[in-house]
Image 1 (cartoon, helix red, strand yellow):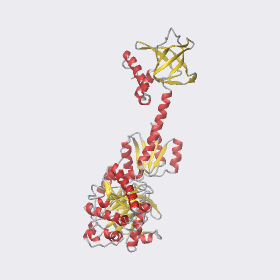
Image 2: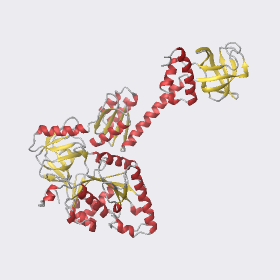
Image 3: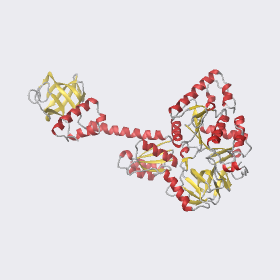
Image 4: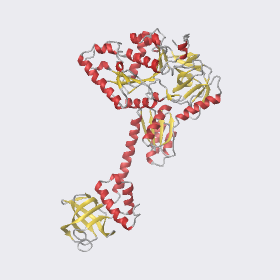
Length: 603
């Protein structure tokens, strides 16, 4: 049933749209295989052409869902027209695409490999689902890989589960309850779907195999049931009203120039309609020249040309060809104007874009992401990590991004963070010349972690350099009967009471609270070996140039390394956490003495 020739007379079909289903999960956990299995089975179960493969979306009508799910879905129990699966390869983050401020998807399937459990992209998907409050179910995939599994093609999971040996069932249960435990760790109460009483309070876990089709009937049944029970009201739309949708992707198409792949979730869009599309700089007002969709799935394997249609009703995926779409943004709103005031529609699009506008400052990193929603997710994560942003945009990393990053005052901000985007060759070359770092990843928190590790290692290196070039606090005592030479230089045995004793540092002796310089450490020996420094608790012999034992210094004297005021300030205010506890203690004593004479010393 294509969107153009559907002529349902049933009023429910005319007012209830198809729920939009997002499929998420970690790479290699079987998202695409699962979609392919649903699509392939749908083609087998439906008549040729019944399944419409739209742009980035597959519409599976209710009667085909019912045939695939068998006794689990009775079409007489449902008013909703079926399910629309979004499939945008390379856009695992498409749940961050918005529809009027919410998530574009009405419901999501989180695919988790029963062998691997939760992985980085699983956690990221969970985070997105939590933030957008999108209801979801878990497809625990690859049950057929459990050793000894006896496959039963396309069977409901309970039926095939009961047919397994006790050992196989026990093995699978262990893996499934591990996933349920991980969901619990992330704040979700979950159980096997057949044990869940209230899907609004608990997440249903459906064991499946994308290879054998086992559990697919259950997955479809749960999605239809959830949609019918909890989303019927939200699915009510005005099928004849002006279309409203979200851009999935902007693509060059031969013969048409820049086009947009659009998911339409309300109303209708027709050829020649005036539309307003969210753009990089301002909303784009343009006219639909062509609506394009691939041919039905039965033919798509051999025929990749598009079919031109006159109109499309929600919910559907469609390619729109129109002038001036070069600056359209993935994730941006699209609205048909029709009989409404153009300025009002532009204002609506601007308001929706403003909802996801990222706040930027005069200093910070440059952020690029594949969609508006991803950009928003990135901005939220960076804000949480207290990383400032100077510019945030949708699109690949280009030379102008490098130009912006290169003007940062703080070296740590000469950085571009790219989520799920490519780096243009010119930008790469320019970054090398301008000393700008580029980090890219398709997992947000990994991207931020990578940058934080760089910041941490840079700061550590800077602190290490400072600590090497700064006087370190030290209090030490000359041991009795340990004078080896009286002067030129004096050589005495000492015990380090606290702090770090290093060569080429000035030595002072406090007279009251006033330090008096007595000489300079010229050498340190430990058990006859020359060393550069000695730490608290060590006993070493020290050569001090300047004093004579018995005059300026005496055995049992307590001596200190002299701290210049600037060094003391840096140690107290910037490096206190970087120095050992005993050094902090020596610093504290030293400051206490100096501040009895001058309360503002070292501040």
